Image (cartoon, rainbow, N blue to C red; front, side):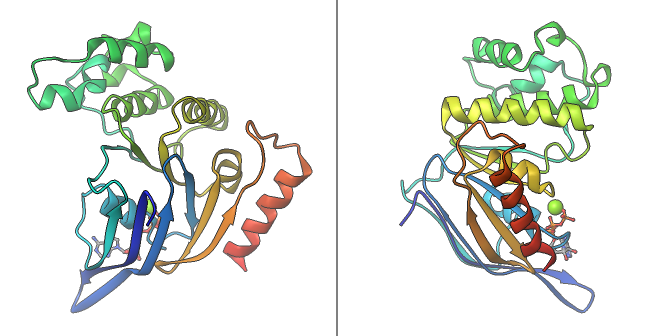
Length: 240
Ligand SMILES: Nc1ncnc2c1ncn2[C@@H]1O[C@H](COP(=O)(O)OP(=O)(O)OP(=O)(O)O)[C@@H](O)[C@H]1O
Ligand SMILES: [Mg+2]
């Protein structure tokens, strides 16, 4: 038993008169502190899997087990920032705490997160005043402010320009190196997966078709021939 085990997950969505099978015997295990990228064609079931882990969606059958017994605290970052437009940046980051009506709101933690994410000046700004990359950083801050043990990211940089994307990738890597949280990242970007994760899982029609360990030292150089070769190999598994 690992820290995280998804065992033989099946997910059927009702569709028309029948069902659409989105996950079909999906299994994945991960030790604590693992960084797993999940890649696969559109419709292969990546979002469905993350939503089931996050508890946002019921599975049809199968099991999710945690070695520690209790489910960990989970932070999720979606493809779009999904911020509350009527709340300031700071309050969006603190959202999980404010909405639970707690007495002790961790303002210090929010302050540190905003600083780390380069958003201190925008603490009192509203989402409409932010660029796409900044809004996505706020969404990341909101996920981290829950002090998650497991971070789920569903193409978090998909809508961002190349430069913003690269700088957020560096941010995530810094966080990962610092805190060693367990991260599941869904991405279409094989470069991103190879730059960031310890393991790449290829999803094909609702099941894992390949698992590749990335044995390159962090921080990884994209100019390294081994990096390029790994990217090519993974691409061949997706297209082949
Ligand atoms: N609510 C739903 N009802 C019916 N079918 C659904 C529903 N949600 C997803 N599906 C189907 O389940 C399959 C998996 O969807 P999912 O969103 O998990 O794919 P994905 O790998 O995240 O794709 P993408 O890369 O495009 O985001 C797809 O064929 C999709 O059409
Ligand atoms: Mg998806």
